[in-house]
Length: 339
Image (cartoon, rainbow, N blue to C red; front, side, top):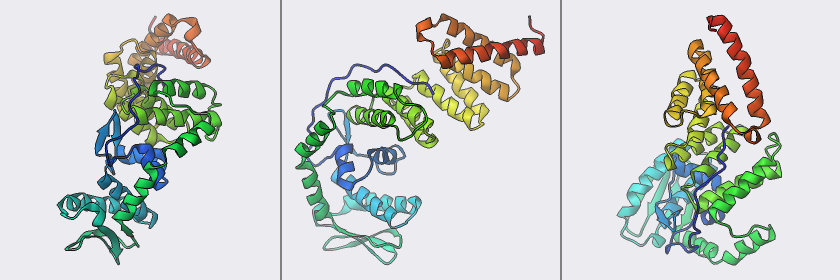
């Protein structure tokens, strides 16, 4: 997978958030959830943060009610589809409630999830589980989380992690990633790189290069769906980024979807006609569908691009692929009768 080594300059944002809104990290701490799960829920539209401030996505109190409901319903064994139905109705009903949100009560009764105020009860959807919590209690938990910034700072200081900008975290992640052995999914270097990429994106959700590199890490450890989500996010931030588009095409090729891979690589080459990895990848995809003549042309373009790459910038993998490409070029020329 292709990685990005550069990112735009970044100006640190203010730490404060608008009143009543929490950052991804604060919500993760509140509900004892991985930050990656919250980001996945947001990317798939399951539960998205509805606010923004200081360049960050922020969760409103209504968003937190949805997360509380979702977490408990999923823990009780409901399918994601049934939980989504519950949340859809909650989103529709909560804005209609005249009572302050802190006075609501959300609970289950047999197969129904109910939202109550002193006048009405709303049936959120069907689902057999036990769910009963006071919204005021949730508000109190939020207050406790927000009252502990020094605890978080002390924890980070103990780990030797200082306050850094998104770009600095991105560069740190790139450095740690280089120290990963490429095999062990629990290797400290991998875990630190992944955490740094996630923290960089927490600070700057528009940092496309961090999405691309995090996606490459996920692909390397077998999380193909997570990798695809990250590459999609990178392209949402920077629609012309060749690394992310090329990596999406590579995932399609890996799963045997040659036509999608070809379309993806062609998209890359429209905006970056000399992008070596796209020429190599599309050649492989074209060979998979019998396009030997076109594959030959792209392999030649790949070798030419590698030749123009400074020797110091060529790693062992690139040299190995160039040698393989040359062997295939010779075989295709013989087979096609090309001099």
